[in-house]
Length: 268
Length: 124
Image 1 (cartoon, each protein chain N blue to C red):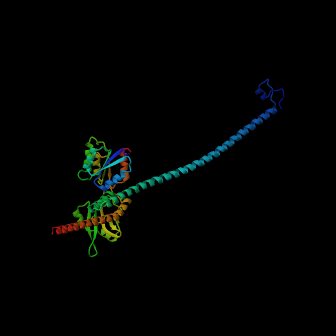
Image 2 (cartoon, each protein chain N blue to C red):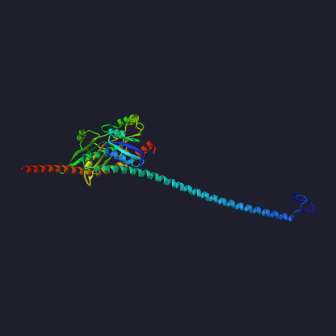
């Protein structure tokens, strides 16, 4: 126990000549300081724990966001793919719309044939092709009549007999396609594509493609849609134009006859 | 409001309509049509165009002759020219580009390809 007349280190620190601090007070002071320190430490510990919890929450949030970002990225990719698909579909529809419009914009027989030629050449990319009508014979059979020859002269085209493939297409009404176009040489006895021109179940003609343009490597989905369109609409357009031309010719003949009769009766 | 004018030169009405419909997707572009090279030259003399799109195989005057004449014309010698043709051989492409064409597109065309080429050349 420290004596009363001796200066301890506390008194020394407090300075001489000042009233000495009682040890009990000092102990209380230290205890209070210890308590305060413990409080601060406890608050620090709590704060650290809170920070750790917050850190954990943030980690979880980051993981969640990363998951969401990958989801958004996947959605973006899906949208981009869909956009490309829609663009392609728009392009296809544009081709089909223009082709249909051109096929049905006239009743002139030659213009209809020109529209079929242009669609087959420019939209499908065929280089050598023919369009042959199928005309019924009195004995119940049919005979071919060449309507269009593109990429080969008319004389040569007329001499080409109906190929077995075209014959089968006319008989069955089922189109014929080859899958690979690259490196295929034109063979007039074997078309690479042969499409029946049909009005409902009646085949009135056939489109035979013997060669495609060199840049045309394969048939795209739009080509198949254009073939389907040609199969139906080209046949209807040809048929309607032929009927119109025939009726117009008959009308002219009848009108001429009426004029002749009228003028004869007037002169008498 | 159209800021640019395009001249589409194509003898096939079907093909011309397809190109015109494709270009309608560019609101900044007004499209004028011509049947062949001679018709195109007449229109070029009477108006100012920002881009020329032409076929090669046409009656009266073909696309290559048109390109060479346009490149000599004071008003339109700098005009961007796009060739759209069935001629897919490399030598045809090189000949057209050597004459002054800026782009060469082979048929059958894809509308987005034509649109993108026009946008690129007009910096739209």
